[in-house]
Length: 256
Ligand code: BG6
Image 1 (cartoon, rainbow, N blue to C red):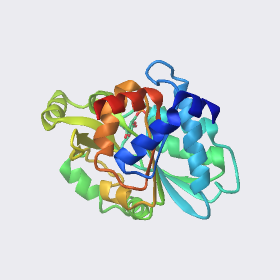
Image 2 (tube, rainbow, N blue to C red; image 1 turned 180 degrees about the horizontal axis):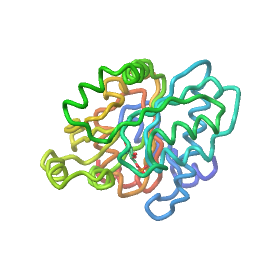
Image 3 (spheres, rainbow, N blue to C red; image 1 turned 120 degrees about the horizontal axis):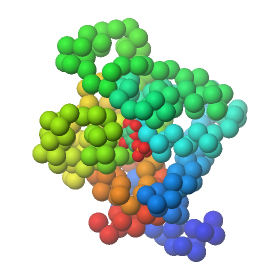
C-alpha cells in the first residue's frame, strides 16, 4: 500500500524477514503501546492471512490474549472459513475470561461460521493432576487435535507481564527471572537466546507440535514487546508469519 511505501515499512519487512529466516513479516503502522487501535490493524492483517490459508477442512489452534482477540473484529462469514475448526491452544483458564483461548476459539467460530472445541482446565496443575488428566478421553482427543493442527494463531507476551497476569507465585516469578525468561508464547517462556526455559503445566499444544504445523501466525506489537518477540523468533519455525507494528519493528532493528 501507499502507506507502506511512503513509510519505508516494506523495506523493514524485507530486512526482518531475512534476519529472522521466517516466511514473512507484516508490519502495520503505529505503536501498540500508545495507540491501542493498532491491534485492530494487526488483526485485519491476521484475518487476511487466515483467509489466504483457509481452504478445506482445517484445524486452527488459537491462544488467548488481547492481540489475538482483536482478530475477531475482522473475521466475517465466508465459505472459505466455514470448514475451519477452532481449538483452544491451551486449556488453562488463568486469565480474564475475554482473553482466554477457549473464549477466543468460540468467538472466532461464531464470527466465521466455523466450529470450535474447548477445554477448561486450571492454569496450573500439580504433577499428579496433570498425569491423571492426560488419561482422560476428552483430554486425549484434544491432544490428538494438537497433533493435527494445520494453523496456529498466537500472541507473544513479555515474560514478566504474562507471569503477573497469570497470578504466578512470587517463587515462580523469581524462577522465571533466574532462568532469564524474556518472552512468552502459548505457555512457554523463552530466554534471550531463544531457548524455552519454562513451560506452564497445563494441557496445551507443545512447542514441537507448533513447529510441525504447516502455518503459524504470530501476532504481537508495541515497542515494549520487542525483546519478547526477539526471544521467541530466535529459534523460529521457518513457516512463521510474524504480524507486528512499526513500534516493535523499529525497536527490534535497534536491538539486533
Ligand atoms: C496470552 C497467551 O493469553 O496472551 C500468550 O496465552 C500470549 O501466549 C499473550 O503471549 C499475549 O497477550 P496480549 O494481550 O499482549 O496480546
